[in-house]
Amino acid sequence: MKTKTFIISGLVGGIANWLLGWLFYGILLADFFPQPEESSATMVYILLGCIMYGLFISYVYNRWAQISTAATGAKAGAVIGLFMGLYYNFFNLAMQPETTAQMAVADVGISIVMTAIVGAIIGAINGKMN
Image 1 (cartoon, rainbow, N blue to C red):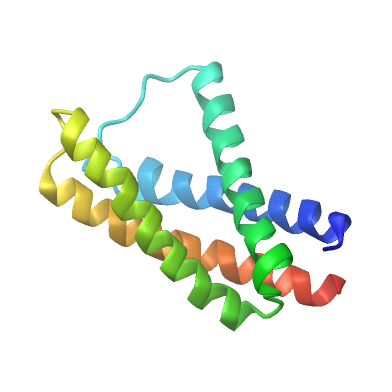
Image 2: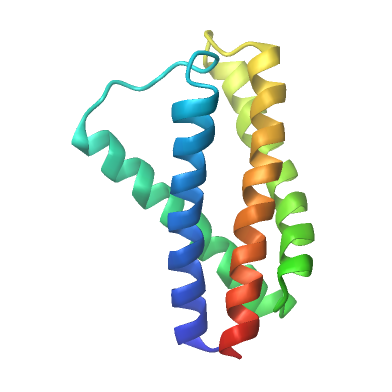
């Protein structure tokens, strides 16, 4: 695994994930999902979480799967997004009383789309850098 490729594609993927989250959760579906209280600390933690997610996907793609195209990255990203979305939302349904089944289903769909896009970006960067 090339460390430089892992870090760059992971950081770019993480930033893309953060921007997509802002688009989906902060703009398009802001009235559907509860919004966190605005604070700079909240946004820093959200950004850090998104970067960690990008690095996770980049690690899988670079270390184990050798994914280096946008198409393969999108397909793998969609599958990762499905399972991560289900994982996260089953816990939300169990532990967050304000989470509804409709919110969980919508969030799983968003997770699939967002992670497919992030996966495509990471795959494309991997292909360019390898």
